[in-house]
Length: 193
Image (cartoon, rainbow, N blue to C red; front, side, top):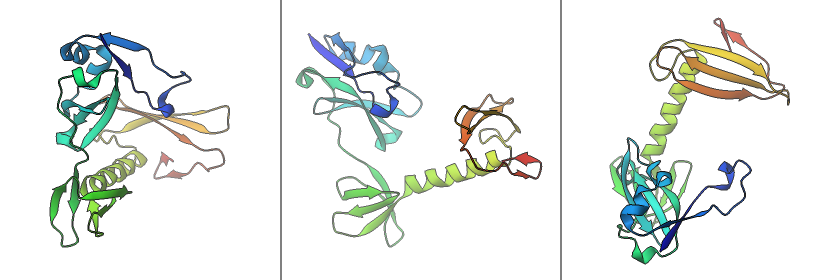
């Protein structure tokens, strides 16, 4: 009998001590049917793959991946091997191409290629632009999902910071943010910031 152990990163442990319990399974189908594995099947899901003893979930046409957990006997699992990182890059001449093994390091949207040249991670750049646009909408009291007005509620916490709960009554979107202790409350155009 084989076994699976879920991977939970240290920052997401909520006080739990490792290791996670072993979950027994017999076949690849049994492994993929586990509830903890099925949580990763969502709108951008592509497939599961193996990387050494790690069960990986691949999403966004291969551009996104996560370690789901660890397999005791990976040789008995019938899944494709993870082919590695995949990047949509903008080269110095402006062309956008998909690269895999040619990328040797990535930091903040800047990629260094095997030949020493640099490129821009286009998906990272687009994600940052979307986050900036969404943030600007939230700052203006507008829901980034449906463009309806947001309702906010502010609650001081025991550390002197302020919890801000954002709720869209049109689409149900929710978000929570915090204003650190000592930052002033600014009211601009009738919106509290």
